[in-house]
Image 1 (cartoon, rainbow, N blue to C red):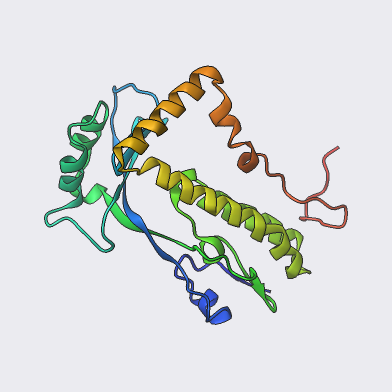
Image 2 (image 1 turned 180 degrees about the vertical axis):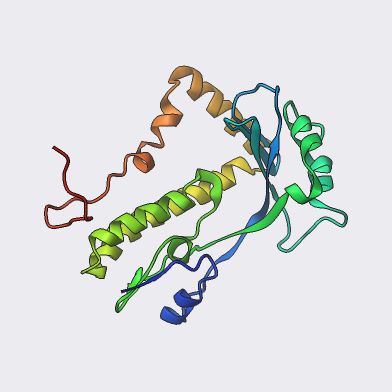
Length: 241
């Protein structure tokens, strides 16, 4: 068995399926940083603006993880540095965003264009070669599922290592559906049309007040996954008494 986990621009995927178009640019770029921010208290948040968004999440050790996304041409980069670009785009946004930017150094900021696979592969295997993770189903990060789906792939592949067609049958429909949801989430969060933004914001506000858990319940289909089980499969551990 050969497991190809060589990422979004997978050489193995191209060798197995040379006629597949591969990943395409999603239309937006992202920035990420982790910086120390001791003494600043805030709740995790994601804030949407026209064609751009920002998220900040406190970590347990006094640092924060922050990310941003914005519509941009593919391959575009700041003329000076990416921290300066974030200041131009988000420097006047609400707290704690200015504090995060003040704590970040230019070398702390990563920027990457987002690519994803729009046309699902015909299979996640060929012969005795199996594709996992972004090599199989690269998706936008807007649902936070890229790494999670790779872990699910690995567990499922271990279960179906003797029958790769079953691995494809198990994983391709689920990951295709989640990838499409991630694309829709990106479109929703990065809208630019003012009328559409007004409708979106009003709908989310009304639904959140009427049924507070509705938005979280919409994620149940993604979060409720359970690994396949079989008495015939062993991972090498003896059952505890």
